[in-house]
Image 1: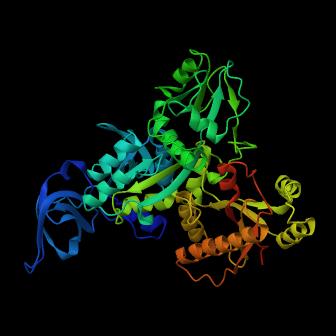
Image 2 (image 1 turned 45 degrees about the horizontal axis):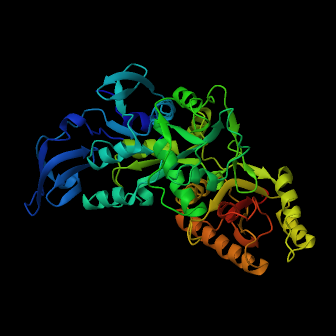
Image 3 (image 1 turned 180 degrees about the vertical axis):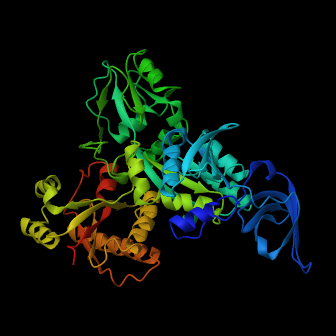
Amino acid sequence: MGVSVLDVIRNMRRAAVFAALCLCGPVAAQDVTLRFPDGSFEASGPLLGFDGEAYRIDSRFGVLTIAASAVTCEGACPAQADPPVLRLDGTPIMTEVLVPALVDAFARSLGLRTRPVSVEDSVGLLLTTPDEQTVAQFNIATSSTTTGFERLVASRADIVFADRWMTEEERATFRQRGLGDLSNPLRKRLIARQAMKLFAGKDVPLASVSPRELVKLTSPGLGSEDVGLVVPAVEVEAFADRLRILQRRSAPGDIAEQSFETTETLQGAGEASTSGPGSIVVTAQTPAPEGMRQVPLSHGCDAASAEDASGDAYPLMIHLWAYTAEPRLPELGRTFLAFAAGSEAQRVIDRAGFIDQRPRPIALGAQGERIARAVADLSDELTLPDLQKAIERLKGFDRLSTVFRFSADGTGLTRASASEAQSLASLLDSGRYDGRQLLFLGMTGSVGSAAENQQIGHRDSQMVMDVVRRAMVTRNDRLPMVHIGLGELFPLACDKTAWGQFVNHRVEVWLGPPP
């Protein structure tokens, strides 16, 4: 008898996961009939998938997931002993380097090996035991975020790696096909981030670029005739998504018709930048185009460092998501995504040159720059004793690098922050910070009175604390949580631009000393 993934997991992790699954492409388009034993219900249609526990078919009732134990199967029913196949698709930013690295690390975490195999239109990786028995297969296709969503809705992919949020049209298509809401927290997971940087040719005299200036450069009729933008083709979707966000916060007008040049390679982008009077290359790739210098992207009054960027604070931070075909993703996919959110995978993400999701504690004594800014930016309504009181309250605490930020209307969390709330809840469930007090601090800019801003910070910090609490599945009384509104005491940027106001409006999490 062959070795199954279930055998490997049970023996090495003591966890019951993948039984013999089958999501095999060759049978996915063939018809089956599922029938209750008493004849009270019957559904027929193309088989979309089978995970050893449930069938998924495209029937006249829409896409149905039915427990295998409840029905009999007739027609092109899957072979129960075949190894599971998971189909991954999406943006080259992730699928060319990061996803294969994660699959390899996932295999090693199970005591397995990966071996490449020839697969049409994708890269196949077999997961094998040391004696070369295949227990699973990952097929990794490189297309684009848009194409990945199309294949997901057509049941030609199980997980899509996206460099942008889905559009309302894409979301509506999934609902119309009976595939549920793709924005459901169970359907998506923030895997990593990547900062896009600006590189200028020698003929571009700009010392820095603000979000508003960047939007103008890409808007017909507003851009400069002397400076243009060049973007590698594989990063166009991610860049366009960030521009739409910047437009809502930084500049008026319609950005649907972007005006920038695209090239197939980063080398081509560098060559294009020198062909005109002056160009700026926007890319998350490394190394930098030859002969070009990096241009800081400002918060409005200050330069924003891509290297020190945290979350949404950097205007061109790409969010890299994993979307699933349905809430009930097959066991192989669920286990892989759970691994991708763990600490071992986060180290792989970091080594691959991406920004991982690990919250890092930062001691109060290591935050002299932000304290110096707080002293320099004290408003007429706040005094040095107010700041000293706040600092005194934070003595002995460490600030987590996780920061929660708010949507354009200020009433809810950004999509990335909502995902981070789930991740923090999972971390707390694991017992990582048991016995340590969690302090949620609500921060704002200086627009409005100091008293009003303190109230906003109080409201926001309570809201984030409640979101994290609700996301936890274990008892949270072992984790004392407190929320405080500090308002405008600790700004990160000036408030002269909408982006600076967005950066300042946040909730931070601070950890008390260990018990």
